[in-house]
Amino acid sequence: MDSDFKATVLVVDDASDKLLQMEQLLRQRYHVRLAHSGADALHLARQAPHPDLVLLAMDLPDMDGFAVLRGLKSNVASADIAVMFLTAGEPVRDDEARALREGAADIMARASAPGTLLARVDTHAELRAARRMLGDRQRHLAHLVAERMREADQMQDAIIIALASLAESRDLDAGNHIRRTQHFVAALARELRFHTCHWAELSDDNIALLFKAAPLHDIGMVGVPDAIVRKSGKLTGAEFEQMKLHTVFGRDAIAGVARTLGASNAFLRYAGEITYSHQEHWDGSGYPQALAGAAIPLSARLMAVADVYDALISERPYRPAFTHETAVELIRQERGEHFDPDVVDALLAIAESFKSIALQFQA
Figure (cartoon, rainbow, N blue to C red):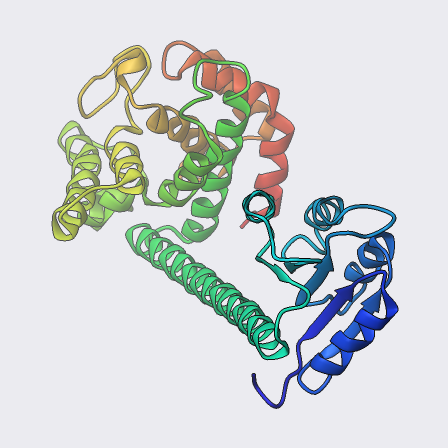
């Protein structure tokens, strides 16, 4: 045993002379506590600092040793304490089997040679110390892993926001637009899962991934010429066709990441769906594929409402910002045409939350 640390042994026996013998045997190596009954043993075992080992006589007057063992195992404060039964004579096979089956660590005769008894106590105390050390190391490792994962998540979030902001850097409100839309998407998803068939897809984990992926919706804008993006007037037909390609550029950028990694994942799937399909319309009049209805990925349908709402409440060179109420009404009018009816209904249910998010991240 480590000379700088003494384990604690609780000895339980109704015979005072036997308690004294055990104390004399153990006190040089251990802190020793004594109990004369099963009730005393249960009480002392639950007091901090808890014993590392209980030497338990099987023939106590108030309860048998198995009842004490069950009491120890049923309480969280004493459940993991090692218990070694001490029998009046040599342990019988049935008692040995039952003791081990019910959770005792060992069983031996109380009258065993002192050296043998002490060696067995040493073994169980060392096992207890090793388990404690292993548990401490596992908890420390789990803490380190959690910390590294938090750092990785923070780095991932920072990179996503940086890339999205770079793609939209020609818009002075890009950073706030990104933050508003990702909160809008998450709010819509949380509302939508409670009253539609989408509850399975819109789990907490998937909503967290949607929140992360939403800022990338216009990453493909980096491939569209400044003259088109910054144009204050109406785009020509040819210019609009070039503008529409931002969905393709975004999809290709996300697909390139997946190829580099050698595999895709749920985050990249959502990012690809959002970048490529957030300009699709429920009635099939959108782009780039003219998808309609449920053929449009749910992530993109959520993004469409979030993105248009934010565009409506934001000032543009060719018009002032609409009020929250007007923006919501304009989206409601497009229910079943531009937008998924279920997603519009979710917006109507949480319109005040949208208003709060817009105020929180206003320019």
